[in-house]
Image (tube, rainbow, N blue to C red):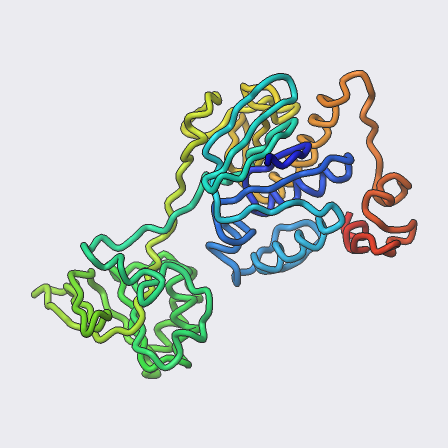
Amino acid sequence: MSIQTDVVIIGAGPVGLFQVFELGLQGLKAEVIDALPQTGGQCTELYPDKPIFDIPAVPECTGQQLIDNLEKQIAPFSPGMHLDQTVDELQKRGENDFYVRTSIGTEFECRAVIIAAGAGSFTPVRVRLEGIEKFEDQQLFYRVRDPARHAGKDVVILGGGDSALDWAVQLAPSVKSLTLVNRTERFRAAEASVNKLYELAEAGGATILMGALKGFETTDGRLSSISLTLRDENKTEKVLPVDDLLVFFGLSPKLGPIESWGLELERKLVTINLATFETSIPGIYAIGDINTYEGKKKLILSGFHEAALAAFAIKQAFEPDKKVNLQYTTTSPLMHERLGVDADGVAVDGGGSAEAVKSQ
């Protein structure tokens, strides 16, 4: 049976989550779909522990803290979250009438669709060695979900970006041995992270090698060692014992099914009407990094602005004969009612969090 809602949002990154809030202020219900198994998009995939400094009125927060706070902010509107699935089918059946079906068969009927999918769905760049994929999520990992599971083990990290270096520094004190392998002597990470890694190596807490993965060996059906071709004059081969292999070659963005929806694209980005953020198909909107227009800046705060304007445009499209008035969460009784708070920003009748108002 299809889920009935006002708007389906494709993408549960920071901009998609804030879109829930802006729609909620307009009295509109939203369901959110994301390909990742958790909310947060790039914030939680690429820099959950890295500081962000350009969110208005928040001097500093990590990517994960930003997502946690956004989830608190949208709690009064109880959005449906449909994670670890992609949108496989999108049909426009009439004016303000869409059908959406996901990769696991979840179906929706809605009046508008908002694409907030960042640069598309992100998939890790994988190791290209035949047969090694069978160890994925057992001994081969493309992200760290539980740092404790690697404690006391021989850990090898492949990569030279922020994620590789940050995890090397964080895991080193608890593992049996840690080796970081980068293809060259140039790292794609913050200078401070590079310095920390070399300090760790000088203290004997880690080994740094320059080279490329060549092969692997197994013992009793488990990954037991990897072989490297080192980047030296002799192209020396080196074998490392390994219990866990962590690979941080980056994430590859893919538009996926979006490319087949008939939307007008420019360099694989969705073009929009700058006044409404509506795409070339009426009723489908695009906000955040997925869209393009003259002067576009790919910033989270820009995406927040786009989400607010899209919400007003959608409300107006649903009620074309009525004027959509701008109301402030500070003073509007209607906004307070929708947020579930009183005039002082205190939750009433089991309603939403006071932070939702106080943050506006």
